[in-house]
Image (cartoon, rainbow, N blue to C red; front, side, top):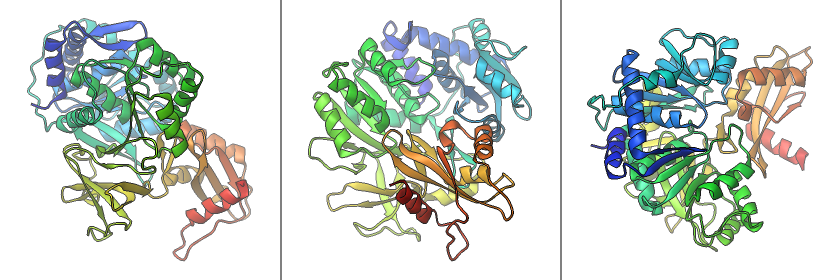
Length: 509
């Protein structure tokens, strides 16, 4: 049976005394981790949760995060990871929409969220804390340690849901992608096959564990029987990444291009062993030629693989880079995956023509949670699209033209202009707003907002910045807010974002 709980149980038998997880000075063998997972699963049951219930997780990277993912898998609950960078109002929306009955959170984050008015209510019945938090909130680890380490033996099927991951939608409201055990385990197995990762490898999960990239990397590692170290610093710093690669002797990890820049710098300065990293995975943004060649030169032993996917799709295509090879492509479909490029009527376009990329295979989400209309719109039969425009060349290589039209990717995070514009136009002085992404060497893209005033009003940039700080995650907040007398309007009455982007870029030059 292709379930995450059974994958872990199998490795607890095969590799009982082998290190499974490392977090700073703490280590758990597969046997110890499996016991912890059983205790956590039994705690969920003792709290009154049942198979199919939703458990929200608001934690930084930690052993507790990993065990909660797998505890949900073990007893059939659905894990709902919450982005730590969301504003309290955004967190409250995800908690309410997901129908989460339990929230396990990091004490200081809960303290801040409670102070901003986010409290239990609706479906949310219980809150537990890791680290001291709001008064009266019980400690998760104390309750977990009181539970037996025996398997609760809840029947879980491979098609049962395991995670509900929220990804922003073009309408500005997050959508929850419901993913099964089978789809997540297939991502792990197909990626491992494509990349050549084996149980002898040691991985480093750098990105936050609420991010699907880290979820997939940790799942891959624990399903295969490798050792995986979790980035343990609360604040990201490239120096710490290099330190942890060296400290844990990592042979594989997943990056975004921004992080690869730091890795290339470290290799050129002799700060990391060029023979150590064997598999370097990148995703979430295009890889430029110069950076590709720096990595290939700095790590001559490594496989440098660019993975295309999405929260809803899983890992769909891959390209293994080599000097002088194709650049700008997302590669070709991975094993067991099928890709079609369709026009607006759902017909396959001619080779070289641009259309919307749709994928079919064993790694797709099941549905958007509580949104049958969005689900029906995204699926064309067995093929699922997320709005990415692409074309295929004569050699079969796929190229993205526009990632989710007008979407901005900053430091590997997706930002949808509509969501930011909605916040800006809440201010009574703002008549119109347009949010665009401009190329940025550090972040990939920079979020820039252009606003025009309502008649008779004057706009305070400082007031808009305060509004964004209160309502948007930090990566979504505009780095610059420009005030124009008016914005360019098209024939349909809509703001022409592309023209705004061009004018802002020209003024920057």
